[in-house]
Length: 133
Length: 382
Image (cartoon, rainbow over all chains, first blue to last red; front, side, top):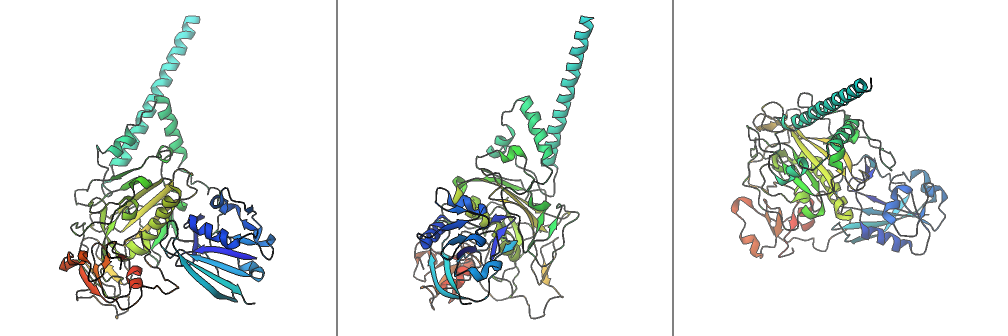
């Protein structure tokens, strides 16, 4: 499966169970990247995908198959790292408060990186890592 | 018998009505007291449109009672909304903040207060109209509570103005080479400029350390800013500077925030940011400072003229670590306005207008300046 996460400069993802940030153009970029493949989100992320055809499934990290894409905001991906083919990390390039942070699985290598302007972020960095295990 | 019963019923109704009336008056009076008897925190300015909007909202007698009842029930922390409750880096927490028992700084720029539940009442939470209020300065000239319902309509649209003319209580010029930007103190907006666009409002500026400004307050301001930009919703936002006794420099600020339209689903926090600077000992009575003896001796005050930063430009990334090279990186010299935090090409006409006091010529890279909180001039676009 393929995973996308968003992190701040300190690797943070959530504060008080709320997402640190959001950006409409980032979501569009993720959906373009997923193309015609199936997209899973957990119920926490459902609000970001209103009127978009995605599968809402809190067990998506278990259920997703090889070519599926999962947008993950509120769960550690470490237990599922063996299943992950590519990992997309979107970086906000800002600092937010955090009490839940991203944990990078081992064995992933950076293959591509881009920068783009978001709807409310001057610069979002998109890094794509491939699983070398 | 019927007459007696009728009289008794009438008497009962009168007694009940009187009791309700007394209760309502007592409750109202208690609310008034709460807002006006916080000398250390100052009091709201009377007569502002925003305050009158809050206080003169027409309510029926019954609805007033109902609202008061609702307010009383809110002292219990709310459970998280439709969110997961996960942490893998839990922050330190305290039950409440009071000037007599302040939390102790332990290497984290903030602590969570009351499980992140802000103390807004239900009537406050129901307002979806933007406003901002800033308390009058107290007898010592100190700021009080800054409170706003922030919507996109009151967020800044232009460039930041000068704020160097404001000298908050306890203001001292002190430089240390290990402090980001070197200046120990910033003129620290209670409600960040990026949220309400207040420039040189002396009721919104306190003497705050660079550490509190950037590590403590800015991340929360960023979170609120992004949320409003993306959702166009409103956020209740209250910042309370906490002074101890007659001290002129605040020990910290309490920030409470709550997103209105989604009942706190997007933004909900209550934190206390420490007005400290690691490595520096601060005399909060006067603002004087010195190296903290416990710290390494390589940290020393700076006496040379170096870049000054008075406030972070908060609509820009502040501590970003770009992983990719920027096309603009190079040895270009820039002229920095250390007051407005804009940087310019040497040929920019705006650079000529910068006073000597606020002018800094540097060979820092573009990314380096941005990472320090400066932003490129909109005219010369360096």
